[in-house]
Length: 528
Image (tube, rainbow, N blue to C red; front, top):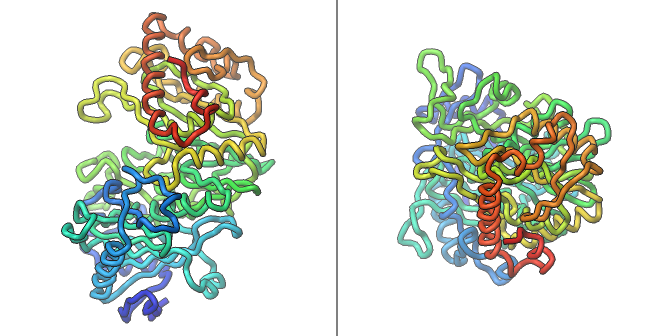
């Protein structure tokens, strides 16, 4: 565990702890990190400093002749020249060499042995080491002994700032990815989630190159057949809640890949939102935040170290990171068979999308690229009516290729494996936010159960006149009057106006991606 040689990385610190156990990391954190402590549940409480969330505008990708044509350049992937990357890497190493102790986590990304990537994380904070110990797939002693050279390296010098006068830097924060060097350099942010998403971003580049679809999704499996189901959805759509299904096993909650053999989880842990968490609302997540887990940026009382999950005085983005095997229904190893179903979750605050509809392959590509949900009044300052939100492939900040590349892979795998695709609205019915009401969770659970049982595959449908998909009109344990949204509105003319408004927003958003998709996919969108 100690005296690990990092000289090949240009690091000469004598005390290096390689893959320390959680107990050792606890000792290191309490001794060396002022403010770090232990919750009454046993989780390690740590703080990420000024940055309590990701910094997407500070993410850079090295523009290199070998990969330049592959990258979707723009606001997601800002270009960086090779010299600046080398300068920032040197700056990170200079900082790391001033520390008296460094922590190395050697672990895997991807549960499928044929596609797993050897990851090395080099960091100066014990909290970062425990976070990645949880989020990556932990090697056995034998695997660690034969680990060899890593495929991908993260240099986390987040406590040290980038130089804002360096070419291409816009702030003191910089997260730089070199696809050729297979390295990430982190400066100016101690938010642990940057490491997790750096691995996923790399997988989003590497996997499609070999015909594997990387997905920002949760996934469950049928405990009897082993077949899987994939759930996509942006924040607030119910992805985490619906993947906690007692009838199914949990493959993973956030990052997966789809191969010719089935699906696999990229990660070895879960990174759950902790805001307003309670034992009653999310019992499995609540019990997982025990010894070995990390609680990030939470508020606790000094007497009992009891965490107040309702306190947002530090940030609304409080988080907990824990090994996936802390979840009672986790499927270990986190691999499963071919997906029978793909579910796109949306929280439609306009109240015009049906509770469940069946999508054609081209419609699936269209809605995958769109990645729609809606914000509602009160969730953000200045939001007074429903506001459409789109994130391509339900994970825009982490894409490397054009969204059309991922959509093509999705369609290819759907056709090959006979996968069914559904659009499920967990948002409003009977009117928009403010007039209607939120879809009952019991109805959504019944819909998802019916999808998994196969009951909806031959259910009667009607074609939506605006969006073109097939609205399911009969579902076990869901009142038929709820299933066709227009029938739940008192003012039918207002429904038509609102539906056309939302369709127009879809068309306006999709215009950004049209050059990278086929005519059939473009034609699969709503008619306005």
